[in-house]
Figure (cartoon, one colour):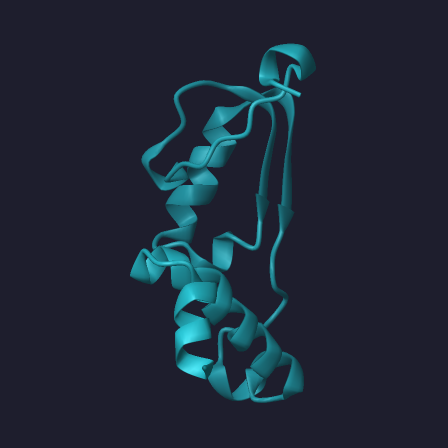
Length: 103
């Protein structure tokens, strides 16, 4: 449904530069650990929440020490992150380059 029928709007932004308004709910899913400046991102989220607002954050629970992530779960996180970020880093869909690479 269009936003005017549901009351919901989904946006993609560089939140570390601030948000244009205040919100009742802000969500980030698998974002904070990849942010260039996680602290600025979180500070912007806090400023943009209305009183009583809710921030829903889901992120990877891993160590900031590489050696502590050298395990099967760490390898999976790294592999998934490469595929998910590929479009943003190269500007091309991963399936297209993946098909060419594996054909």
